[in-house]
Image (tube, rainbow, N blue to C red; front, side, top):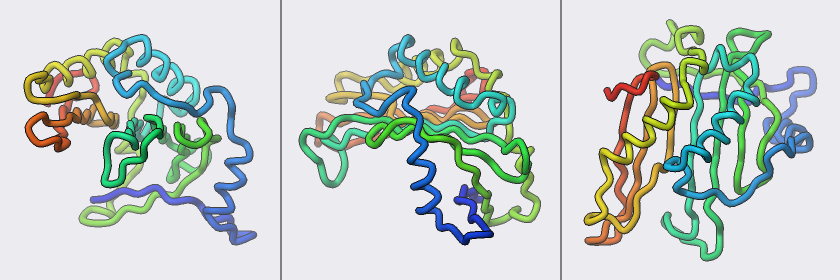
Length: 213
């Protein structure tokens, strides 16, 4: 079963998602502006705390009905099919929680590090496809972000790096993405191989208490 979040259409005006996005962008918050990210910040507890606190602050009451939280780090000058010299490393952070009015929908907050930082919440519909779609219930996907302590967050990051760290094998390694949902953490540890300069990613999974699965 695959789940997607889609922009809600304004029925009265038949607004497109692009037009809605323009409206939202015009109200972008300036609490934490966009900018370069330390691509190894997941190995630095004080930096993790800053972003952990932002998740709690931005989600507010939505933290108790969280659907997912995802971090993705991009290194455009170092990685990818087309490397763009001079471009800084940046972070995408997405927070998704149940809408407090229409319980079938969600609200999504994004931080776009290569654009303009934090955006205001957007209400989104959910489209589910595949086996079991007709039985989908958003409530079954939700968790209380309060279950994820800062201590556990840092422990999972440290354990993921410890498991796959290999200085003899890699030029560099770092946590490139973190996905938090009801079932737990999915952590991707990416590295550049010394032998052939290829990128390799390993995945580390735990439950919300930090126990490896």
